[in-house]
Length: 122
Image (cartoon, rainbow, N blue to C red; front, top):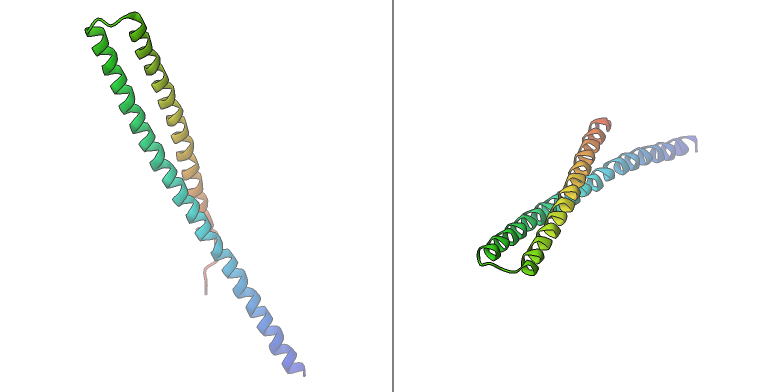
């Protein structure tokens, strides 16, 4: 009976060690998933910034054209208001991109730290 209990105890011990390592390994895909999400956010932010710049350029060209054609104060004021809104949107998207970039770098550092701190599987 003593030998049976030793075998059972050894089985439980081995199982708990295997489960513990599996739980540590399960954290890595979640961290990689966060990095993937952060990369998607950065890509989306870049697209928004590109679109904002494009709209700003179009509105500036429209203002120039209206001035050349002798548009009234109301039309020119409307163009300037659009340009001001475009600048605000561009600035907001740039701030968001900066924040997402910082978050990505932080998550990447933490992932590398976690991978380097994990014990090697012997």
